[in-house]
Length: 304
Length: 328
Image (cartoon, rainbow over all chains, first blue to last red; front, side, top):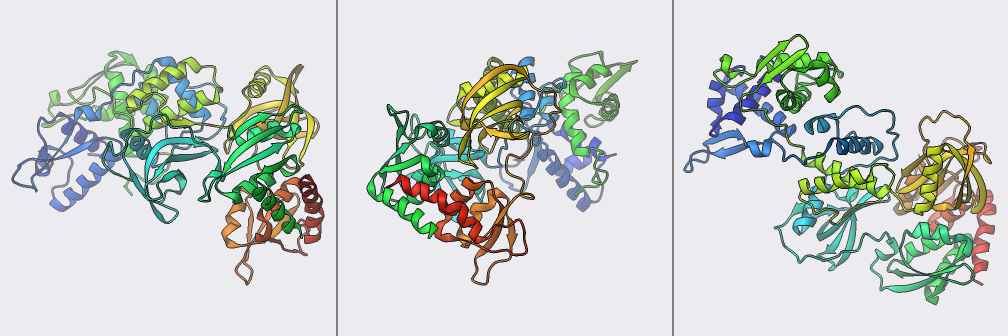
């Protein structure tokens, strides 16, 4: 009997059994497994692993409460089959188009749509607009945010503990923001720099943070310096570029001559200086004077 | 690795298993369905479908008597499948699949790009429910900041095949110029929206960052017929144009990675050496001023493309002087 047939028969057996089946019984009941106990065991373990890799949930149950070694196997119907999300045909077409336009084929394949009942071929209308990746640990952080679990992980070779409040995709990166438990401060972490599988604590470990503001992509606020309130003047002909660069950050006041003042909160003055250099001669730090002087001084020493 | 590995084009047992358990409930629910309908529904060849049904025919539960096996009745082109208890419902989506679908919908809604926004919004609600998320709760997908009106004008001209007149700030030259563009695509790269198109002033294809377009005006002049092809990389080609070779502290060498540098041998004092394509005068000035004391230009007399320290200085000094003047 070939492997495909054996995998299908094993799935059918474990789905239809009315009680968890011990491994010896599986060997006796099914055709196609080797008679030798060792090679049977190896083949069975591999089949089990292959089925699980396909998302088929095989449960291991202790049969005799007094005997820890009395294990039985079965597949729970409810967790095998899906709770139908109830997507309409036109929603499936829109989803298929979205997945193609976002080049998500690596994560959502034809099989995904087959599980949802299949969806006809797209025409040529699916020019890619970008590539959206879903990193391995994203789901863990999304769930921890919802269930209010604290999370531990390795980040740039440091152990970090946090209460995750929200997850955002921005600038082609995924970020998780929340309270850093060791620093007792708000922090944002980039998911591609999380180096170990995140470990979650028990649910409801923190109070619902309420309405959490979206990730403000302001790296000059990620430092540990005492906060400085910086006022920057942006030239009239550069206001649209600077607004695009700041992406909604800062408090803006338009001036009568078309220029604008923007107020930024700075806790990382090096990163703030990089931002000012990006604007070149189209902008100027007005206040505080210490920050203004340090930007000027840095540029002076850089060219001499 | 399993014995199935070998010919990469041949599906493995796992691939076929996944296919069979997903298509079987659909077929069983439609007695007398044609092979052609099945292949169309699932994007499979008729041979694949017949091959799968031949395997299904052998599947069942112990003791594998005629009544224990899945019934596959073929009449001409028509198929009827009768299942026992197993395989009556499709295998569930994995968490990763469900989350990916949800994020795809959220991204498209945020992009505002599709003609299907109402459909996407209702799909988003259903997927959020299936995931156990409240709709829109604490997860956002942002493909780029741009003035929605300008983005809309770009997409409108693209759809209508008409030229667009822009006032565009070039980051690399630090100047605003008028451009006439034949739009070819509107794309998101590294978190920014770009208009890709033929630039009449440059006489070449260009990527324009949408948030650097100050004004855009739609015209009714049709674009020249062109072959669209694939959008280029939005970063300058590292294999042509002037380069600069820099010695940097190891701690900041990574800052150059986004410019796809050529990695050269370290200096004897441990500093890293990288050669990068110069994006333009203003680009070079920003880089040199930001890295300040952490960077030094390395002379590469044997490399015609590499700027000398004096050449770099001649570019950077006047720009730095203008910034310093601003503060006087």
